Image 1 (spheres, rainbow, N blue to C red):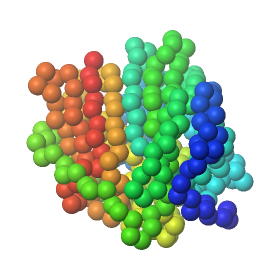
Image 2 (image 1 turned 90 degrees about the vertical axis):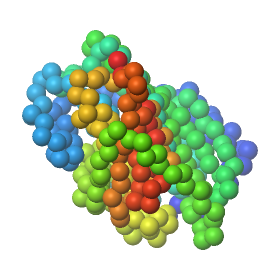
Image 3 (image 1 turned 45 degrees about the vertical axis):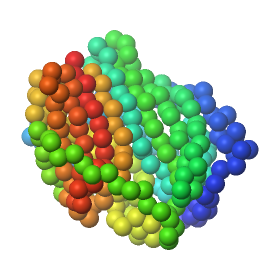
Length: 296
């Protein structure tokens, strides 16, 4: 068993300069768009989709089922992620979260049967002093190509921060808006989180190891994956606007969602029908994620 990450709370100038030396680094991965991951996520989301075949389009945000990092077991760090210092910079702060992202779909569509390539680049590494310790933000840009050309551009925000300590101030929550046109309730559980972790080959222990997430990282329960919540919001658009095609999608995680309570998905199309405001609400009425879908 790997030793736990030291409880580092601040980043000095020399460490930040070292981390920023990662800016400009690139990574290229290749993959094949196969049907099995799509079948798996369809079942996990309890959808009644026809079996995917060659030529079936990959739904919005389901591309996260591909290009999965697969570090060897000996390369895993104490939080279940790969040890730091490969493509991503070795940020010493112990907690890592997917903070949000921005996606832009191009004319080419990812389909079952495609041979695909993803080129990733570290765009920036920035530092912010927070009330409970320092924060480091890493911005990664991905571009996915198939044989016809560029299909998807994505910016991925990753935030690193210190572990929670007794007495640390808690950011004030924001009330969730209530003027939704669409609302659905999701009841998460550990099986849903395990299946999504398995489909995305995500070893991050905050999603399935209750002892680790409560005793080491200080959360009350298992954390629902940010990408899973974003996918559920995109699915809300697919359900209520089945003929629409996404051009852009941006999302920002505001507050963690835990497996202990149901949460709500909300959507509100714009008056001109060209975009949809999306957000999630926890059991106490607080905003947990904001998103905007822009339609073709």
